[in-house]
Amino acid sequence: MTTFLLPNRPITSLDGYLATETGGLGVETAQRLGSKAAIEMITAAGLRGRGGGGFPTGRKWAGIAGQEGTRRYLVCNGAEGEPGTFKDRALLRANPYQVVEGLIIAAFAVGAEEAFICLKASFEREIAAVTRAVQEFQSAGICSDCTVTIVAGPEEYLFGEEKAMLEVIEGKPPLPRWFPPYEHGLFAASPQEGWEAGPHGSHRRTDEPNPTLVNNVETLANVPHILARGADWFRSMGTEDSPGTAVATIVGDVVAPDVGEIELGTPLRAVIDAVGSGLADGRSVKAVFSGVANPVVTAAQLDTPVSYEGFTTIGSGMGSAGFIVLDDTACMVDAAYRLSRFLSIESCGQCPPCKIGSSEITESLERIEIGQGDSTDIASMHGWLERVTDGSRCYLAAEEQRLVSSVLRAFPEEFAQHLEMHRCPRPAKRPIPKLVDLVGGHATYDESFWRKRPDWTYDPV
Ligand SMILES: Cc1cc2nc3c(=O)[nH]c(=O)nc-3n(C[C@H](O)[C@H](O)[C@H](O)COP(=O)(O)O)c2cc1C
Ligand code: SF4
Image (tube, rainbow, N blue to C red; front, side, top):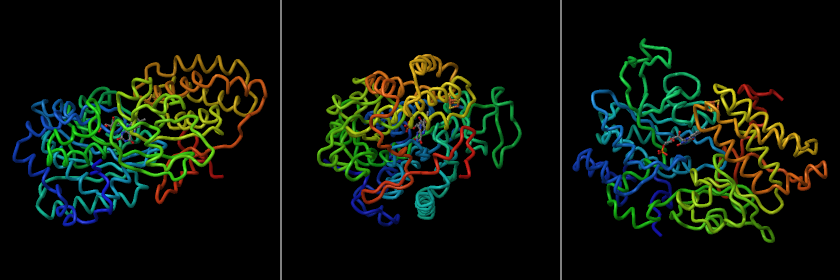
């Protein structure tokens, strides 16, 4: 299979990039064809957003481009805060130039007057790489008149949520606003936001909607290749509904956690072997989580194709192809507790059922895990799982609901064992795989996360 997003050796200069087979051809093609035809090519290619939701990229672009008489903005989402995912950082390390070229094409296609590239402030290496790439494109005259701002954002998971990301760009904390970016974009005033019509930095707030296109790093990385080689070339890889490749992350109980580019439609079992080097001798897979937003995948479902439709068929979701593998020695109550804790801590509390519900569910899971739970904890969890999404502004509450319900459904016997034995029968604990680094088969996790409190301050000890 052709892999095109992850080169064998990192590309570290614009000259090096332009010397590759397709470097720079995408932007040339887009300019030659015009914005409408460029959007049509992305639509024909069937590219879908790689940030987790899988929304058709061409349709998103056409929706933004179609809104006349208002300013438009573009945001590249490189916040990458979901446990088990490292692919955007891997892409920015390997070839930041294709991401910037994709950004230039997207800005041209939707008529954006300004673009923002958002990364966490802690991603110092990736910020340096992408800043350099932007400067090189500008000084080479490929986008000399583009205004591109690199935004170094907070550590919070919600920073990656698109409505929260717009708030951060505007200088506020990562608290999701009500309306989606295509309806209520950057620097737009509205009653829901308190009519902040005054100037904001160098931007004047307007009472126009300023539709804003938000695309993930990997989504934009695909764009120049599609423009340069055509929709049919892209569709020659992957499946009918999920064309192309995905840059997958495999962490957890595998021999060598890593990031690798796979053809969409490859069975999950083969992806775990190819990217994560499989499991240690004698161990087998008990469960796989695709990030923290989707129902658990069980051992019986390991032949599921890694594609949007493949995961939908088993009632789960592919997410951003970041997979957390648990072997047969793992405790599923503990796994649910850890991931639920992550979500409850990261919940911002603007919608009380989300913050209170996810915290209550986490506490029940912890009590059951340490042998102090009883049947009232199970009943309380079911009650909160029904209400946790009530009135929610963003998808985080649904993530809690989908993930915890699925573990209760798939592994009821493990909950029963904990209640009967008043202890955990499988006490080997795993870290929460919030990745700080992933290199040479070695994953480094953010250990400070255990000190993070529900109000986003950190316990000093
Ligand atoms: C809690 C939460 C966190 C998210 N974090 C990210 C992230 O780190 N990176 C990302 O690209 N999308 C993230 N998303 C999805 C974005 O809101 C958005 O859908 C995506 O950036 C759109 O880009 P795409 O169409 O190219 O996939 C998150 C969503 C939620 C609900
Ligand atoms: S659903 Fe949860 S995380 Fe999202 S805005 Fe509401 S409280 Fe915050």
